Amino acid sequence: MTQVIAIDGPSASGKSTVAKAVAKRLGFFYVDSGSIYRGITWHALENEVDIHDADAVIQNTRSADWVFRAEQNVAVFSINGYTPTDELRTARLSEAVSDVASMPKVRAFVNDRLRELTGLGSLTIDGRDIGSVVFPDTPYKFYLDADPAERAQRRYRELVETGEAEKAQEVLESLKRRDAKDSSREEAPLKVADGAYVINSTSMTIDEVVQAVIDKVEGDLR
Ligand code: CDP
Image: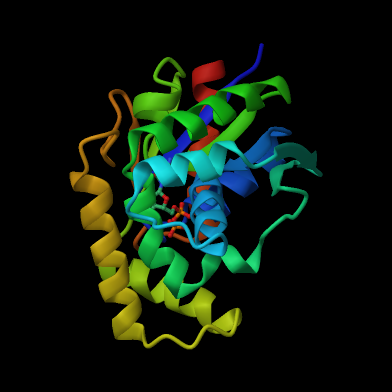
């Protein structure tokens, strides 16, 4: 049977690294739901669509050709034949994405794509509402958290590696703004899903978090 492991939590809590590693160890496909919100935002900015105009954003999204495919054990997508990668992580896009992700029709579009992806096989998906809204019936729900200062440090180190020269303080402020928007929006706000297993990773290594998730999933499967 197809299984879904939902890993939700705030920005830079380690979700994507953990979800990717868990997927690899269990032979599941990894899906980064945030990258789809980022892809929608990127495509809107590329076409100079007003990202505060929900009708224009959804129309721009729906009229594009989205193709999802598996590359190794990761689900990736192209928009009109192009697969954006680094473009999705710029500071400008990170500032805009939470506004786009608050639009109900955008969320419905993403949720449909995520549910279709179960056609690939079992999935590990990271996001904000995967356990609460998209796959509420999955028994495997995790909420990954870490202190804001630690999360800002982690994101800062990632950005330095990719050559994005934002100041550490700006990274912290930007994360806080996005967390506030994601937690306070009306539609599918970031919250701990019913029955989710909460892991605070502030003083844990990635391997320890991955092991904690796998132990819980395997314990439940037994
Ligand atoms: O990597 P990071 O944690 O910074 O963010 P992300 O997972 O790439 O998600 C980017 C943005 O997409 C979030 O700040 C949310 O506004 C939105 N998002 C969402 O609303 N629901 C999801 N399931 C995933 C992301």
